[in-house]
Amino acid sequence: MHLMYVPETGASATAGRRYTLKKVLDGQITKSAHPARFSPDDKWSRHRITIRRRFGLLLTEKKGLMVEGQ
Image 1 (cartoon, rainbow, N blue to C red):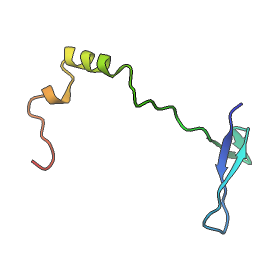
Image 2: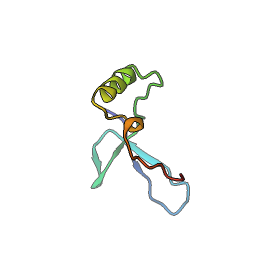
Image 3: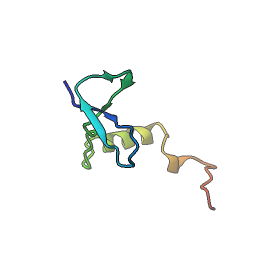
Image 4: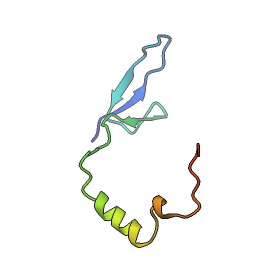
């Protein structure tokens, strides 16, 4: 079970959230209350760049690529 929420609709500007464990609450689909995992130390970026370089998919290696503002 994961903690889920539904944005609270109300007259006030700071309505808040209604938390629940259900996937659907009152006919409204709930959203996850947990943030997505993010790691600033990307373990696989070197491998992705190597693969892109090997198959010529890097944007810096494409000919005729126009950059906006130039």
